[in-house]
Image 1: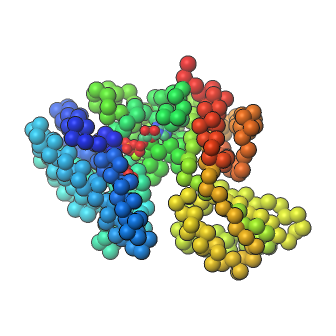
Image 2: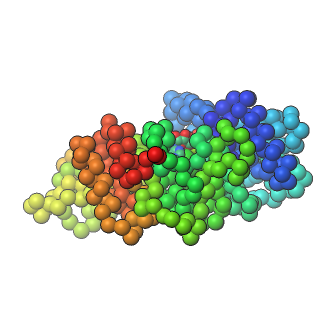
Length: 406
Ligand code: ADP
Ligand code: ASP
Ligand code: MG
């Protein structure tokens, strides 16, 4: 069972969570619980770390931002003990959950489950601080924002759990963010593959890496509300399943947005072999993820403009890297814009249907929304547009693909 920030926001909420855990224990289940920081806490810690100068030492950034989860794990253990359920807290380093040393977005390498298993066998609920791990250098790491989902799925896989239930503040995965698209519909089931695309394209209900791990390890995963009465499948949330388990497949199952985008255009890049490698190599060395890319055809055959997107939080670093190699690369200037949003439509049914992309372009055109960059994959189409159009475009696309609840 994993509980996110709003689900553990205060002692009342933690008391309600403890009751849910107790209900599962009373059904005869052995339960490992993963908790996030109380809502707002991680944001505050990130702000403090940045104010103190986090770019100097990412080890210390993680030492700071991982603390929110420590508090929640202790508090939930206390709430459980209070209602007669034996429980103890576990920090990432105590288990340990071993990660690589990529601070701020570390990946889990291995989890030693021996002590957790012993605790579960003695009927002691394990309350595990999500989001954190231990690097080979024995420093505290964090798994990237939303990383408690990944802790939960990785533990479920390592413990061969029969279920991984992600409790949050919505009652499942919707066709679009229900906070923006009020006519979004809840999905009873979604494939791992679509959920993976939706998560990576902005649907933050599950962290992308958690879906990837669930898919690779076939972890039975469901998204449930911690605010409704009941536990597990009583709650009728959304199950994330293999494609074979879905009988009737819609062409498009969801529309997502991501504001974490920034666009960079390099003007007059020399049009010669090796230039893309020379630009994207240094960005990748600096750990900047490049996403959408368009290269224009050069008019005169000697130089061309190159546009691509990077995470908004990495724009400054990307521009710094590019500036440092400007002379070698030979472009004349870089222009950036971070008032952009990426909108995507996702669906495995796209593989076998034509016209899906065109409906997206036509819908945006009807609303006079200009498309800046386009990218596609087998099961998704993404466009970059000005951020001011986010809500309008999302709702229009949701309607255009027939996803609105009746
Ligand atoms: P938690 O703190 O429990 O991890 P998050 O805030 O990370 O919760 O994720 C839940 C939020 O994800 C919801 O409140 C909702 O606004 C947002 N969300 C975005 N896209 C979707 C979607 N397609 N379906 C459900 N929720 C979504
Ligand atoms: N507390 C962390 C965050 O806010 C991890 C999580 O909630 O999953 O990103
Ligand atoms: Mg989350």
